[in-house]
Amino acid sequence: VQLQASGGGLVQVGGSLRLACAASGRTDSANTMAWFRQTPGKEREFVASIRGLPGQKYYANSVAGRFTISRDKNTLYLQMNTLKPEDAAVYSCASTSRRWNASASVDPGNYDYWGQGTLVTVSS
Image 1 (cartoon, rainbow, N blue to C red):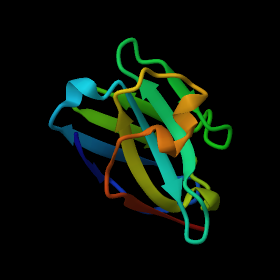
Image 2 (cartoon, helix red, strand yellow):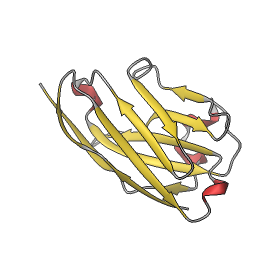
Image 3 (cartoon, one colour):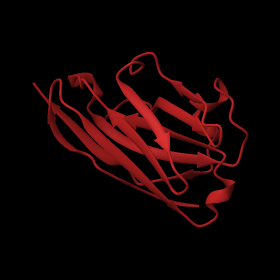
Image 4 (cartoon, one colour):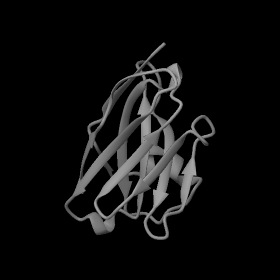
């Protein structure tokens, strides 16, 4: 599975941004997909995950109620609303053939494929 993330950019505090992650290759094996983010000097942080049909979702507490993860056949999305300065990071998408499990989905070590990341900058 190859993943290509896009949609990052500069947005003001309180604004919105939509990230996309295009998947190609054996996309039928992407049972669980997720978004992670990372800032310099910090470990990669879980943002949200989603199962294939029926599309169960799980969010980090820091983004619950503001971010929405979704997917169609070949694209993963992250709608980010009410952005805060602490949301600024490089956002990466990931996928795995492992069956979705909320608690397991937060561990980046459980993912097999990663996109290259897209930078989100939030200005105050």
